[in-house]
Amino acid sequence: MDEVLHSQRIAANNSPPILARLEIEKLPDGTVVLSDGHFLVRRSGSFLRWSFDGYSNAENGPTTAQMLTPPGTVAALSAGYKPIWHSSA
Image (cartoon, rainbow, N blue to C red; front, side, top):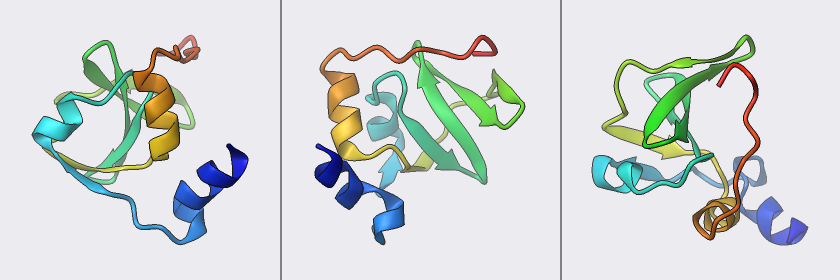
């Protein structure tokens, strides 16, 4: 699994896929995207903005975004893996 995830990471010289609104709405909780320079994470049908200071509410969901979470991790989240959230989330 480590080899699969490593090959899917941006650091492995992959370009993050660009998602349209319909694709974004189907993402499972815990998926991280980049939109308009902000890191957003999907939680309970909406998005939270992430920063080093913690999470905050995002005003609106993104209409386009780059998916930063590796596809293998998205598959695990889609299959029912539940992320453990920081208290600021």
